Length: 91
Image (cartoon, rainbow, N blue to C red; front, side, top):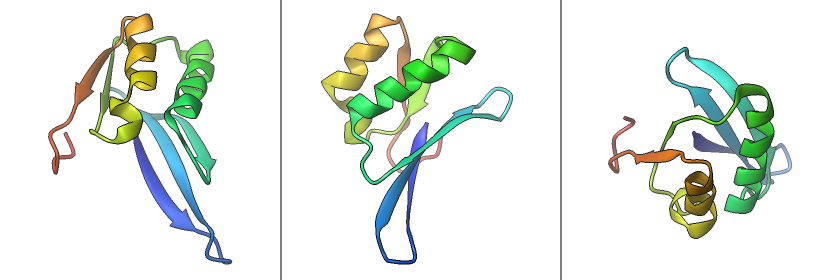
């Protein structure tokens, strides 16, 4: 899971949240909004799990959305291990 950002023609910035299954290289979901706080991320992941189920492990960077209590408590609730990548490394 990771974020991207871009701007529209009128220079309004937005963020894109991508959820990709590393094992089979399948894009599981993409959420786009001006703001993507941790609460919205966990609600979006709950929607994705209705179809895909809960993963055993999630690999993310050390961004504030993934290191805060909202996300870590959500993962702990469902028995999901969080695998933080080392800063500056894609894996």
